[in-house]
Length: 518
Image (cartoon, rainbow, N blue to C red; front, side):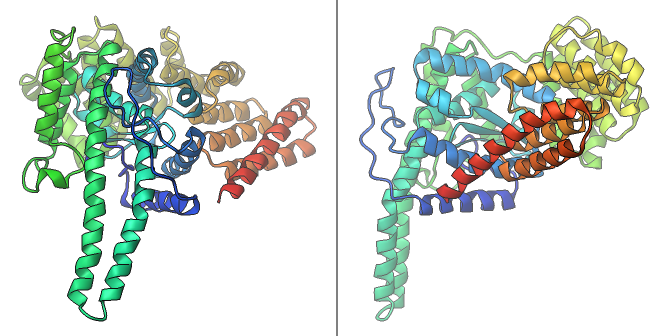
């Protein structure tokens, strides 16, 4: 169900692996004692997340295991353009949570606070243990403003800051004896009355499930309440929560049709809408309404293209970009359609059509700086796809921002243009502050290869594995780099070898720690 502190549904196989991983982790861990009653939060309302018996370090280890599987999944992607946009919303929310006292320093330092994008077209987001978050492109594609997306992220952030995940795990562990008892009673009754046996087993499971559903609904309500405060504190329009819930209701007609409310893990969407409307009326920023910007329309279009790259779906964009169809759309929707059509043509490698559509787009966004920036980034992608490095290099020089998307594109262009040393220097500066940026490490590996530094290149490839939590693969690459350094006669390789040796020892230590946890 959308916006839940549940495991991701990027693919059925991934969900199965993640669930099995969590179950195995819990089974291997000692039983968790019953959690104490929640304390009082900053806003003097019950805080269901306080009092968890699972330490932040233990929760982070569970999150790392699940995130490692997500990184390996084919539906995971790191699109710098969308990531930059999401981070522009995410960072103010994190800052607001700190300001409100919702994010204790212990959690702030121990958790990852990492957002992972998935190609899934469903309208969903999720929180994982240890401060990992998932965001489906289907949700990014359907929201119409930064404020709506902020409401989703604030909700998921609140699940983690309030320790809902670890608290839920503790409750499930406490319920395990009841479930086992029901199973034992069922087996004892089987010899006399098979029907009674089945009833005992199902009845015991139903009681436990009912308790867990009620518990989850309370968590959802608290995540709504805390998330609303975080979102408004960060400067986003509070009405975004209401309009987001309305979209969720439209996206799933099953939400409030059939089935009783007490059989759901979330409160009824209509209840959540009414609650948010009441909070909006009481907010100091009640008059602030969500605004659809040209930049947002373009990012949403990019998300829709990436989430559905089937040929037929890409061709639909060209139909929507026809003048007769554009005339029926709002100004923002027209810009989004033109961006999506150009990007879709690029995906189909129809470069002439992509360029023609991009020209129409640039004419419409010439006076809007954020939208024009996205159009120029798309132009760079198009030039790179065509192999026109010289033209791409000239265009990249006109970009004056320091965004991650610009850095990665510039570095790729510089490497192809024979300026790998400059690209490597820029990337190393970035990675000093963002050591978990796997794509930046991969780009650095290409730059090092182009400049004749094979040991440094293999080391960068190993750091990609480290960033994606695959320490065994990283160790294998570090050892390969050590072998290369021993055989090399290049002075630079021997300098890089000392770094490689240190990193290899660190990986061995991490792997030993993981082995002890199993």
